[in-house]
Image (cartoon, rainbow, N blue to C red; front, side, top):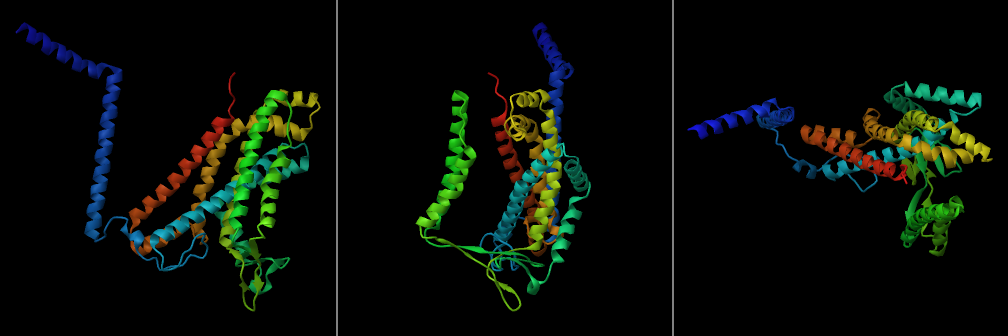
Length: 396
């Protein structure tokens, strides 16, 4: 009896310890919170399924195999009105990726130049860039998208198209460019281009290691241009010029042939690029200012030119400050591309809305939107984190 009393007392003591101990009490609260969250999600899912059944709507993703019955005016892959909803969604996703990638490329170039020029000793250039940055940053991006779209729609009609060398035409229907025609042997040219990029990266890496050991440098810029540009041209000539460009021709009422880029795409690209570039310029400026002034003074004492100092000394150190917030701007640009629906550019949101209205599968389409943008954001973050890890300072 005494032993049983002692065991009961010890058990009660341990249970009290579970509640009075801060660590155990925290675990109890976390478990209770997770349990409540699961119960809440289960209730929402159950209630949603019941409501869909009451409304006579079938849930599931089988609708993506149904016929779309609508056209898409700008696409990277083959598509027609007889294609499925799933293929239409893929076309919209590719359109979103294209405008995001081109926007990131353009905004990075504009942003870096603007950030550097804003620190220029030239009063006029510095103030002009400041006006651009402050104005663009404080105007909503949606208004800028509509602004560029209205300007492009105000261009001359097709019959009065502005032309550059009778090869490029600009009108209120967009930009008409020569379209490439790939024949037998064109894969060799593309392979030479990819090989040139790989070789230039390999040589650059080898040159940096060689510089650390010997102090000698190689003209990496000239070598890279030769490999990326000259090598494919040589293969192009040797293969018998397998890639031709079909220039658009003026017709009586329209332009024939060529590659047409819609005004919606151009307006969206210009707006997203200039808007994001304004924020990137401030990130670049702050990154440059974070580098100790002693670094610049030491470079000046060694007789280095200003452009070499910026390129070889300041920017490599500033990148370690620039990259983390730059990642956020890339993500913002990608997500802001969903505003394309306002001007009719057929990205994944615009096409998804059409699919939603025709099929009635609202929850499924919203989940596809979320999965698409989540995947893009995670992939972009992973790449930028890898790059940031690669360029960070290593303690020796």
